[in-house]
Image (cartoon, rainbow over all chains, first blue to last red; front, top):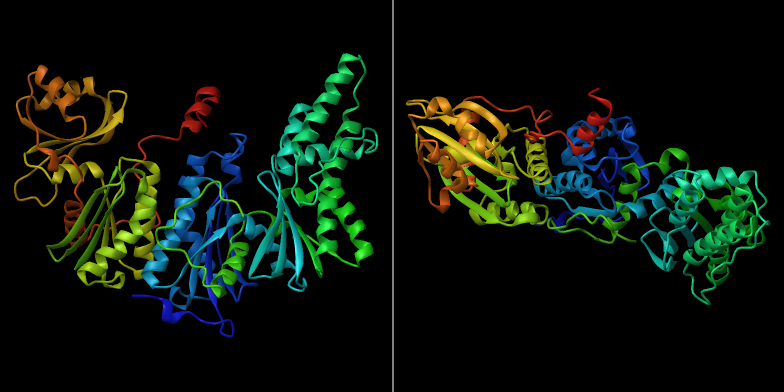
Length: 345
Length: 235
């Protein structure tokens, strides 16, 4: 009953069906040898959740179950592939909403059992990183990747695409979380990243000299001290009866976050001899961050890569790309794998 | 005809293989929230133990609730995928019908706990020479105290009550002069063998479901939708 003797090596063509349902997109794709995307079907439920001002988990789960077969059918049809042609099946198993995750994870398990092919459980965050490699297959290795969002801040080193080493991560808030908290504190709205960035455009980033966390030799990040400094600054100014320029405050805060992220990244670039630098995750959309990192990379003669917009949103192609490299490592999941809503890299 | 019955609607994970009217094997395991981890390994195990493989299947019967939404989606997703991959028919069956079909009596009241002194119930009649139970009342939820009123036309019949909350329901019905019949422990859980047998009967009589439309018997719209409607009216 084992699929062990069917496992191919990397000289043979490998077809993987990948599935994704961690939030409010139901997605399926077929890819060949990792980065060649034969189909990439995404059915978004954004309109269903709009009236609630956010994703409603139970509504999302119901919709995933409805869309599951149509999305898989379309992905197979567009790729011109039948179930029997598949070498493996993959699904995101975290992080995300547990009810949603379970839909495609259960489907992938069933496909694995029915076709006797390996099951691959993929971390959604890794998917966002690999979206870069789909968009820019020319990216040279080894590379450094900074992946930053509302849920995580990780600095990674890739010798090749088969795996990564975590150099540093946040010891308290994620960068995106810091943006959200300060944005809420200043009454600028949600999500905080774009709100702060917009206000910062009209502000002076040198107006206030906020502290940068000093974590010594480590590549870790910390943003809770900065958050406290911003709040203290506002309270002090208010007590003195001074008016606060929100734009200056936003710009100075953003500059402190960007500087912390960029400094650690450049420190890693100096230490590890890399050929490329990649950023991913929601905060990677911040223009000031891209500008500062690209500028500081010039003296190292390195280009900065980030994924195009269409691969920034959730999709299954990026899950399939990760799955391919897990396939080569024979990093397969047992049928007992469960969803992990707070999965980390 | 080889039928796999899958029930993840309650705390009990039910799996049964039925081959042309012969029960090959059955699991009924009280696993609570482990359906996601256990279902596929147990399907693999039951096939292996009994010398079958998934490709041998001719049809699937799956419990569609009422029950835990997350649990139901695990079983139904599995049934849909197996149906799609092997092009075999799938029949969704009410968990209440499974309870009723597994017990004796001509008037059957299967029950599942809906919390806060409420139950999910159906009311069935067993007809002579009929293969299937006749649903007098389709699956719905009701307060336990409302049941005498709902069943008032059947006060002169003996009613079999099966499932959860049977002691409470028996007391309320007896107080209102109903004749009731209750069962020992093994009848008060949905049994996978009954599900698989029902599945075979339905599929043999050509009553399969469209796997693209198959979904749990939700019986309740999402709480967020209820809140929204209370605030803004429906639509």
